[in-house]
Length: 186
Image (cartoon, rainbow, N blue to C red):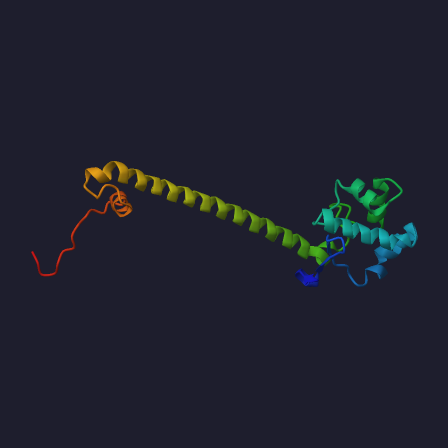
């Protein structure tokens, strides 16, 4: 078991698939919204809402369900229309009618959003680094080609030993066969 942000754990199941955990307020079952949902949908209401939270964790990390009510209704096993599910969640206070955001999502599961943003920034940084590395490798390869070509063409003319690697490198970088000056000699 590996622990993630805010103590959330990821556990590998027997099938090898990772199961991610999500946060739920300890008193959610006693909240007025859940009490209203239980009255409207029966005892199945707890499972219905917890499945909705699980769907958001897996498919919509921001907790916003706008445009996804049909997918959510299929996922939780809702018998009615997706609009009925939306109206039920909003009337019970378990979804924000303006943003279609699940109840208390940002407070309890905000780390999911932050982690997704960090992951996007990390991936973009890695892409930039890889592009810079590729450009650097290309510059080095071009420089090496220049050294190799200059040794073959120019090295023999200059009398640099017919193109030894040292001679080619010296010529390409503008280093001539100079004898070091001795101190005190004129």
